[in-house]
Length: 67
Image (cartoon, rainbow, N blue to C red; front, side, top):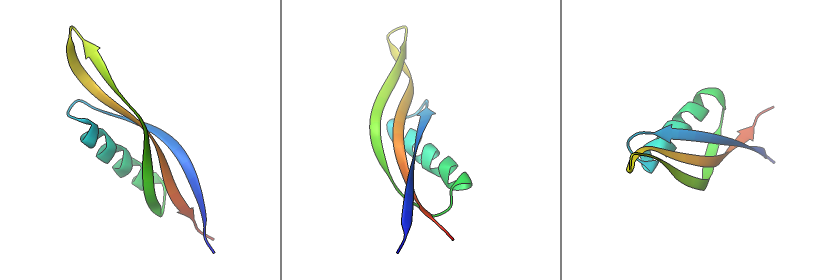
């Protein structure tokens, strides 16, 4: 039997939502072992002077706890 834990993180990118997701998962994997998946909870853009300057995602990352 395995036990999982979920942690919420926010990630940002100046390129795209996809890049923000990839950066968030990459960074989470450096700290958390056994990352199994993520649920993208929210997406948001930051606008300055009528232009998108950042893409942000809030995600819940699931990882398996080890003994």
